[in-house]
Amino acid sequence: MLEWGLNSPEVRRQRRCTLEPARGAVLEIGFGTGLNLPHYPESVTRLTVIDPQRMLPTRVERRISQAPMPVEMFFLDASGRLPFDDDSFDSVVTTFTLCSIDDLPAALAGIRRVLRPDGRFIFLEHGRSDDPKVARRQDFYNPVHRFLALGCNVNRPIDANIRAAGFEVVSLDRFLMPETPKVLGEMYRGAARKL
Image 1 (tube, one colour):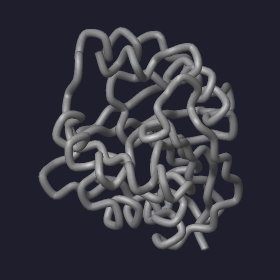
Image 2 (spheres, helix red, strand yellow):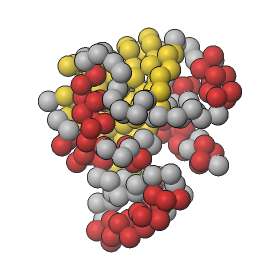
Image 3 (spheres, rainbow, N blue to C red):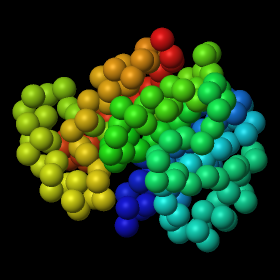
Image 4 (cartoon, helix red, strand yellow):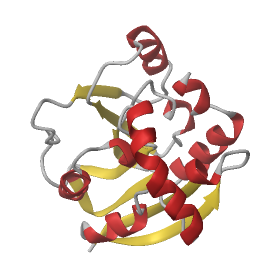
């Protein structure tokens, strides 16, 4: 059911648009079932993916086998630390991931560590509304949503969190995902670089 919601025509369009600047060696955090795979541009030469859990392994294996670039899969251990050297990746990607990471500052610090100095952190996330009325509803609804949606938070200010982790946000599109309640559909799509 969750995969269906994250694979609608509009979400696929947003994935394509988001991933357009990805290049070179790419790390995708929160790979899930591989819904981003068909949307990576030809400029991606190698894809490393990591997730805390195995989901739908047969489907994931099939999607990886159809990828146009080499894909290497990792799983996070209990430490939650990214098992890669500093400055390893040209691009780091998250889509619908930052909402459900328990220790978001540590995760963003890890992204910053493994990203090359000239690299880009590329993201497509839902989060806190700029409208105070909607943000209050998000705060009220968040505990229930976290419980029902496996730890997903609807009220994180994604851009502020990224900036607080030592990034400069170089592009940011804020929009409401069509046909989605405002509490869930406030979107952040953009790219950031290390300061």
